[in-house]
Image (cartoon, rainbow, N blue to C red; front, side, top):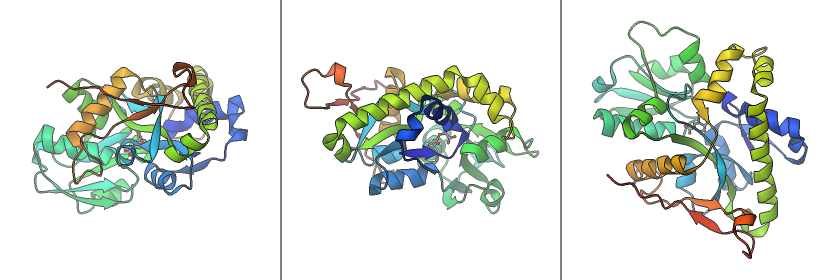
Length: 296
Ligand SMILES: C=C(O[C@@H]1C=C(C(=O)O)C=C[C@H]1O)C(=O)O
């Protein structure tokens, strides 16, 4: 199973350890772009997958319901950091961090369709100093983004834009940056194991959030953020749910961002693993489609 090497997945890791599930799982830690590639190559069976990677490979992956990594407003850790107002980025250079697959797509969508600019893009490692050298803006995710937003007061003239906030203000919807998926081949071969791991993930997430005060007190000992900041990040900024509103957000993003150069089609389906108890008599699993229709 994959595990994202960012703080955003710490409540899950805490829960997997505290429930004992960690003993059943062989965990591979990495950044989202690397974990997506590993899931698709068969190196991993199950785990978090950046939304764009999922949407580009729906024939090979099945999404797990009720759990995701998203936000319903400011997310704190997916940012555009810019030396100039966003409206002035037309024709300028924007660095995209190499660890992200979805935030970089969301940033390009927002800049093109919401702000109305068409910058030049280049991919760089997730180091803000490197990203901003020779560029006017940078799209950064995960812990380096949290550090950029919270620790260093932004130098004069540098603007920090939160992608979760921009999306929410534009569409009124939550945004899902990553969901959890299993390889379709495994779901067909061994649905019981996929269901068990799914149940373990939900239990781990719930326990991690129930024990969030203990988790934050502990994490603040070695993270550069204090316990209250971590608590806010886990409980107010991040949204670990995948229900009807989050599915609407996914459908809206798919339709707006999908296309030949996006890596996924505008009509990419979302097949959710059906729960055993909601599919009586099914041979093991049934795909449930995200048929949300967006009305303009
Ligand atoms: C909230 C976050 O969501 C993430 C953003 C991702 C992306 O942009 O591809 C992928 C997985 C998540 O880690 C974050 O990284 O801070």
